[in-house]
Image 1 (cartoon, rainbow, N blue to C red):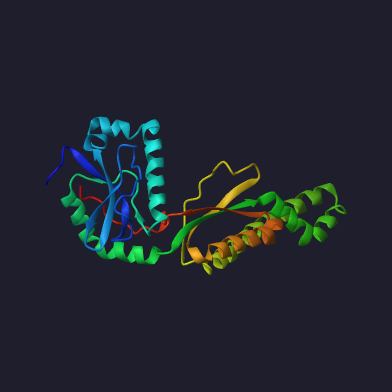
Image 2 (spheres, rainbow, N blue to C red):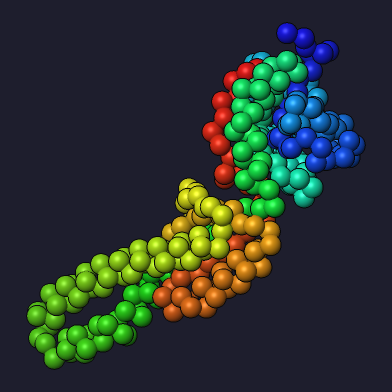
Length: 272
């Protein structure tokens, strides 16, 4: 194994050979860590040289737990990938992937060549678009009460207080069940519509974010791989869905375009 001056190769991703100009003029994790290409058969690895000590060793372990150190470098990692994705399809690597030698990187590329090339072919001329779905449950339940349960609500006023109490509990339980069922059906419908104008989709972890408000919760987080030529059609459909289902308490928020992070195959990176 040859280690050049205690430097490691930090990997941003892989692109088809010949897709990028020789001089990228793209910063790596830091301004003095320039992005370069390492050529392997039909695949180029997008890398930069970094001190091995930044990521390996006891001090590095502590550094990688320091958000003030990690955050700006993670942002630079993402920015480099996004700039490259404007020029070529890319299989993006997660933050922190590095190889101690070119030989180890070459072995990784050779062992995963088929998967990498298949991914790059699949991702060509496509972007990832994120869609988060939010639900205002109170608004949805109020719509149900106004449409499907209005008559039964009116009947409650004719009952004695004791009878009304039990009927109200029963009615609200039915409304809760009905609203949950309606939400589930809407999610299937929306997902199907958007999937029909995208190449593929992925469910992503639902995490409460700053867009969530009281009485409004995130209920779906999807990633869609969309042909660039159909991006406007996809955006238009999201707008239509927002208009069509707003009375049901549904709103969609779109993000991107992004490199296809959510569609990267599960590669084993332990070649360091």
